Length: 167
Image 1: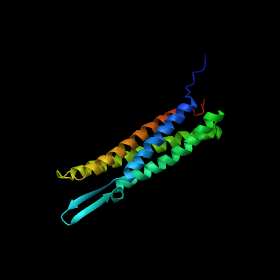
Image 2: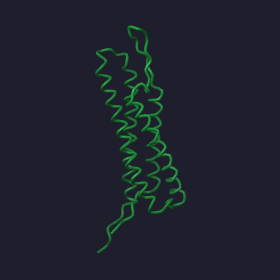
Image 3: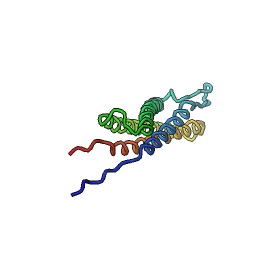
Image 4: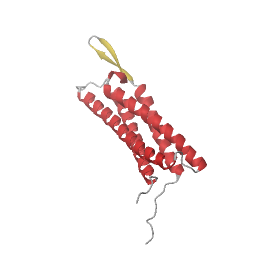
């Protein structure tokens, strides 16, 4: 009986997915970090920014950690593409797999917390449209983080193919 065929992904495809993850996270970081708005109130204008809300701070944390991990893994992927050898051997395959799993779920929680916060703030508006620009940009940042999660999850699937086969 012939052994089952192995599924392999070319190393440059994994690198492309990691680069796309990084780009989504970078744009998300820029959007949420520069998001400010001024709301007129009875006592004067109030300036709001992302750091006024815990969910948006959590989004920033997940994006920054995701970017750092993606940069590290991109460097390892570049090494694999250029030399044809995996840095660290089989043991590093496990780090790739579990790291990709953790980061992808971490990014998903950051996006979900931001979507929830944006939804709650929209409910509190009471017909006042002064927050719409702020909330729209926050939603765009969360959407890009969610797209980064999807790319990180795809990377996780690719890294599962590289796991050592155990009999």
